[in-house]
Image (cartoon, rainbow, N blue to C red):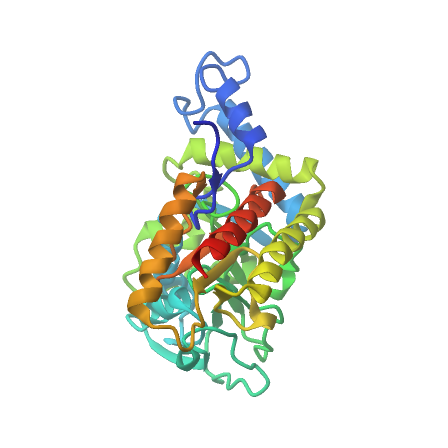
Length: 369
């Protein structure tokens, strides 16, 4: 079998030119006589790889000079603890809860201090983004936290809240590099790269200089201090060298294919194709309020989400996933916590892949309605 269309939420599809370039350089990178997997992180070759990756990322995102770029390990889940350990100096923070990942982050932050849930859409089963018009920001809060794109539930915060001068901390993992971003609006943003920028193993943290301080919470381990990694330029210990190398190739691919504005245009076109089908389908339904829909993660179910009978609907969902798998449309099963289906349309997913999915859905609908 050749390449399939991989709709996984992460680890996710990577650009074919990147994979081919990595294959060509697997045994001998740049005439070094060795793979990047084998080379010392202290070598000039790897330092050049790291420097180029950071420079390209800064260029792509327009990262201001007063922000540091860190390539860390531990995934986004480690950031759930690392953020409060480093920033919750008054032991208080505000969290906006719009799905599973922001809910988990808030729960982790409670290990270190008081968490005020400033807004939540949990009562709506995370099918929308709550209103920020009357957001109650705690005067003593050290920061305001949100997950800008919820991978499981498929919602996106399009208009950032007014944080009343408090630093905004954002998990942008599943929308990272999918569209232009004004980094200056954030105090800190982070992304697990396995969605849109590389294989699993690196978390990119972009943090304003003033938030990198010595006075972290007592007991914070050395490896969980942002200052440790900022001072060492992400080389305090052995980093995930090969993953950083792949990320660098992805950053360069994005630049060569038009940058973030071009990525957004392509992503909007792909998402519109699938959402338009869902909105007119007799069998499939999206689960997110239209104005809050993600361009990256599209959850859907068979039948009306409000009234469908779970037993029969789940059986039809399972039938769809199995038949899609056999047709080369992989990893469409929804997250285990919500069921249904989910198609992730990251940068590297071609328009043709979404068209093939819609064509299959139309055929499945005809056969099952």
